[in-house]
Length: 594
Ligand SMILES: Nc1ncnc2c1ncn2[C@@H]1O[C@H](COP(=O)(O)OP(=O)(O)OP(=O)(O)O)[C@@H](O)[C@H]1O
Ligand SMILES: [Mg+2]
Ligand SMILES: [Mg+2]
Image 1 (cartoon, rainbow, N blue to C red):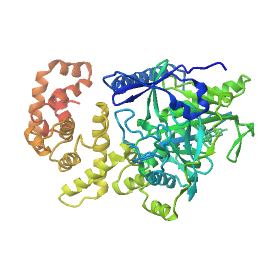
Image 2: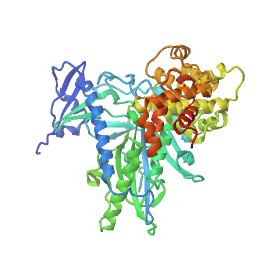
Image 3: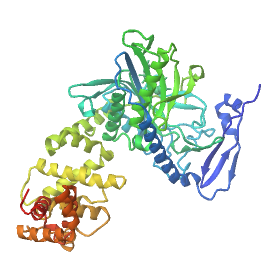
Image 4: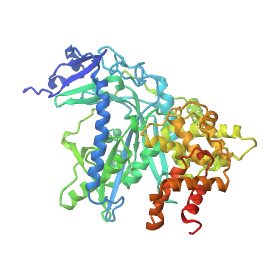
């Protein structure tokens, strides 16, 4: 038989040294364990190069996003969400990394490690003789997820081997639940909370939720080399399989976003799409609206068109764009007399308007599913199910309602607060409100404090983080400092402008207590008289005669903003209110005339 050599060499890191797995002959793959016969050879490499790569990679991602935005801007108008003549159908498989300290079948640590290949046990890399040891710690987050998704929990589930040969899967098979998953028949309801028009509801049924192993992380080094980090290999995932019931790209993305926020809320996961903890495969088919049967069916839903699957999407926008691109590709193919082929396709942020073929039906692998003889069934007691159900943390929908009803927030602000920063912003907000209540001399309705605090936490502080492109951290402006700023503003001890100034100082690392900042920067508010405003306004007007001329003679009223800015730099800025500054300047400039 002619020998076929894999074109790539495999490398992995050990203790800061680059270790190369020799080229191997793919004909050896008939026995998965033969993969382990490869010879390990080490190279000198003073620094783990994976770590070195992190900075350029970030830059590359930024550049890629920039290029994608540019490309997107150059394309003709967006394809609409719903098409009049064609029905789109989407079914989604979501893979989420569970919040568990150990892997699914080994005691290896799952804590994110900066050093590749530092968190692996013999079983994770399929060393001969190693056996799976089920880690019960994965059950709790998995149950919380499935119960939040309204699933029926099966008290007995089993594990199967799904065979395929790829360098991210050292055993040659993935352990997953195929024949009997631990949870079935759930659902998620999308509403206006998820961006649907008011009154519209979409129910997305979930066929099953199954436990399975994650694969290793690989990174292309060059055309012949792939780097592999096995830290992720064997970590516990759940796969959430939806029925093919979504018909809009926007709603498909909203569904994944909602599932992610639910998983976060019940502590089933620690990272979402942003950090690679959640990935989605989207299955797409189309059918002419006047054709009732597209010839395909899935889990009792018939009449569907031929599906293609786009693997590994990791942003919500990516999901929406990839579905649209694939739908439009299938439609033009059918309209030009072609036939959609069952394929696995890929999508990239750099080309958001097209999907590309990875492999066709003929290239589809026969997974040769079989029960894993080394793993006994998983039995989950009804007492445990009941306990998890009773102690489940509130879901985003419940939190939004609480923020609207108890804290006086608008539904939009409430939703934003719930979704931001894995719930950290919400906890911070609640601390600010509690501190504000304790600072108040008399009892103030929580809704009143909540509204003001939300404005400062979401908008004022939020915009400082976003203009600095810094990720959220509750430590940058300690919650008690934030509460004191808002409290002094509410008590009219400082002006809005001073409050913003203090916030900015603290945000930029000023660690003086707020009271000290107020004192030392002379920001304590003592109401200025009209005469005092007038005197300072005259000083400013005299200093900038050209600006005044432009305003009076050329009607350039924009220059008034400049003069206001100048006036508010005066040492008595802490005593000025912006509307009074404008009034005083206008009076001096126009001498009482409008
Ligand atoms: N005709 C179709 N159009 C759109 N989606 C479909 C269609 N048929 C099936 N699907 C969706 O495809 C997904 C199939 O997932 P499932 O895990 O059962 O199989 P798979 O994709 O073959 O397996 P794997 O996990 O190996 O990718 C489901 O989310 C289902 O709703
Ligand atoms: Mg699947
Ligand atoms: Mg699939």
